[in-house]
Structure formats: C-alpha cells, structure tokens
Length: 90
Image (cartoon, rainbow, N blue to C red):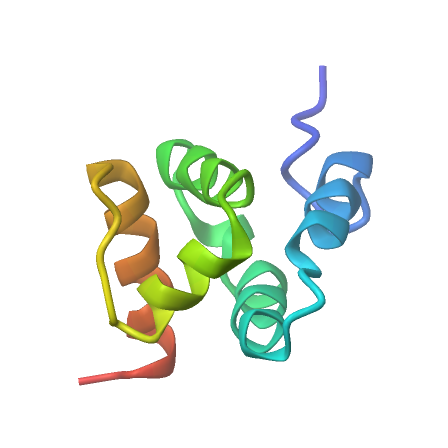
C-alpha cells in the first residue's frame, strides 16, 4: 500500500493544501510555502502536528506566528517553531 503522504500530487496532500489556504494573507504566505517546500520532509509526528495546527482558529495562529502569544499545547508550539524557523533563520 502506497503512503498517501509521500507525494505532492496525492489526494491527502491536495486536501492539506486547501486547508492551508486560510484567506488571511499573513497565514497564507507562511503555510502554503511551508506545505509545498517542507511538509513532505517532516517526520510523521511533525506532519501530524501540522495537520493539528490546521484545525486551529486563524486568529490564534496569527497571534502565534506574530509571536504575540504561544500555544498551550507543546505539539502546536513545536510546529509553530518549525515554521517560524524557516522564515526567521538564525
């Protein structure tokens, strides 16, 4: 059985792409490039964290990515940090 997460043309990846489009420019410019450029390289646990992130409210995600607040959930904080590290390299 083929892993549905393994390619960018899989139905699962396309579903994630649509869920990554938030309609808020500040989130779209972070999430869509991250999905397209980094998601497939994540380990399975971090992929699950990204999927969990997509269930959150846009206003919460905006606050986290603008670093005005932090998620209470350690898994969400990890994926937020991973995404931020891509746009704010050391």
